[in-house]
Structures are given as C-alpha cells and as structure tokens.
Length: 430
Image (cartoon, rainbow, N blue to C red; front, side, top):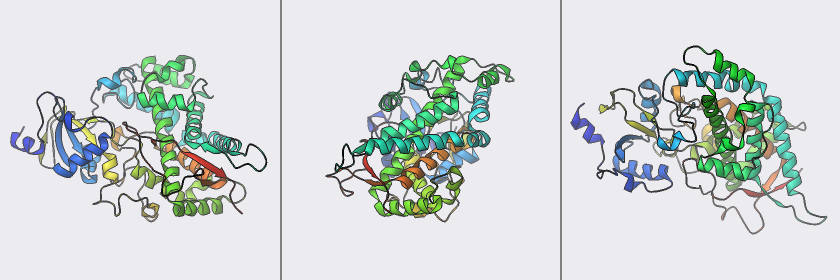
C-alpha cells in the first residue's frame, strides 16, 4: 500500500475517536457534505478506529457503484444492525456471499420481480381507493356550514404503504400496528417483528424457496431478516417518498397545479388507473425531483471493500468502509442548476430514471447491492401521489400559508418531515 497516496486522501483525526467529534448527532449527511466542501468529494476519515471513505460526487459514486462494484460490494458488520437485522442475516446488511445471493433471489422471485409487482396492481388500486375514502371521511365538515377538517396526511400515507406491503407479502393486512407506532418503531429500528408472528404468516412458496434452494441452506432467522427488510424499505422509505413529494408540491403551488392538471386530463372521469401512470410524465418528474432533494436514505447503506484497490489513483485497503452521500450528490451545484430548488422540469426531457444510469440521481443505490424493490416502491408511490392530486385540492390549515410552511427534515438516518403533513383536502373545483 502506497502510504503517501493513502495519507493524502486522509483528513486529520484524533486518537481513538477519529473524526467523530466533527460529526456529532443527527443530520450526518449534512455534516459530511460540509466536510466534503473543505476536503473534496472523496476523502478518508475515521469513525473511531474504522477507516471510512466518504463519496459525495456523481463521478466517484459511478466508480464505486458501477466500475468497481465487484470490489465495493461488501457490507460492514455494524453493531447497531445486528439486533434488529437478526445478526445481519437480511438482504440489506448480509455479508456478500452465497447466503446473500439466496436471500436476494427469494425476495426478487417471490415479491419484487416486475411480473410479481404487476400482479399486485389490483391490490394497489384497491388500497389507493381506500386512502381516498379515508381522506374524504376524515376531512368532511362536522356539520352543515362548518369548515372542512384538517387531515394528518402523513399517517394515512404510512397506513397505505403498510397495508399494501403486508397484503403483498402475507396475503392480508397484519393488525396491531398503528401508523404512529410504526413510524416510531422504524425510527428506532427496534422491535418491529415483535408485534408480528412471522412464522405463522410466511407464505408457503417463500418457505419452499428456503428449503429447496441450492447451496447454503437458510432458516427462519434469515426469513425474519428478509421480512424486516421488506417492511422497513417497503413501508418506511416509500411512505417518506410520497410524503416529501406532497410537501414540496404544497410549498410550490404552481408545480402542484401543473401536476393536478396533467393527472386529471389523463385520468378523465373514470379516475386514476395504474396503466395510465406512464402518461403522467409531470407527476413522475415531481416524484423524482422530491427524491433528488430528499432521498429516503440520504447516506446509502455503508459498503466495504473486499480487497485492496485503487480509486482516483489513491490506494484503498481491503475492509475500508465506504459511505456514499446520495443527499449531497442530489444537491451538488456542479451537477444540478439551482440545486436547492424544487424544479420538476429538470426531469421532463431526459432519460434519468431510478436505475442509476445517471449517478447524479441514486435514491435506490445501484449495482449488485442496489435496492431490489425499485419497481414495487415507485409503482405504489406514483399511484398514491396521482390519486392525491386527482381527487383533492390541497390547502394548509387556517392561519398558515405557503410562505410560512417549512419543509424541515427530522434528524436520523432516514429523515421524515419534522412535522407531519396536516392539510385540508377539498373536492376539486370544476
């Protein structure tokens, strides 16, 4: 290992704690972005005694996630993940190897392939209709002449995604989990499966995949980790994508009007059908723009090099942890004009999609460790957002206006809106 090159990449740190004193608590993606402004888009810091490579540019992300994906495909065995992730025996945190390959195959074949996602169309449309009905009921005036009531849209969005994922995974909605409880549970990443008897709900096809797979045999601990992944990624991150999109549209009423006009024109009088989503380019652009500004996981799940390598002429040792700051990449002024502004038009006339063909936009990561549930998440998010824009005109509660409405994130590794979306839903004007 060339010590001179290694040292040039490394920023100064303290003994034992490394650079932890520069990070503190909360908003880690923002603090790493600030360090990148001083040290460049590629630098090596220490989290305690662990060497950690920080990546905050599209070019370097492409090198890690595409050109050297075979080297940067490891997962560090984080202590904080071992409890809720069943000893890191899940798709997201499992070490790279045969066990991970089998878990990912099971997830894709039985739940997340395009064919399987298509098969859940009626389920999604039913639950989207239920969401609309619940909003109508919750927002209705208490009596004749009264004003329409404000609705906690954030909780209803969580309820939608929870129901869709549980019906898709288990064939029915699992009880015993209210939206507020689920949000707090995932926020702590602790004890989610304690309220669900997973062994009694695992589909027989999924169990068959475990028992009949070639090579390493998996067990029910592995499937618990897999189910945890499906719930955290499928519910929490998808609901946050919808929530952030609605928040940005509320903050930018002209953009919301454009989306509403398109959705209502395409859907006509029959209401929103999933098959129409491909013709709602402005709605899709608004969702992408919201995810550019607010990726569900601002710092992608850490990776780890499985062998020595070179990156931008620097020598990188095996077992180096790698953090990719998707939040900073999405707000990089060298990649995006007016990077801090919500401008859906930037996605209207290009081929940028969720599959990381352009590394300026990587909300679902990329490569072999990328999220396998892109189709599942985006299909539901687009359908939910389309229904919200089709059926209602949205206003802030009395006493609030667009200028005072703050789109502020909570602290944490997967930030939500700091304050839930409390909105007034009105029938659309003719």
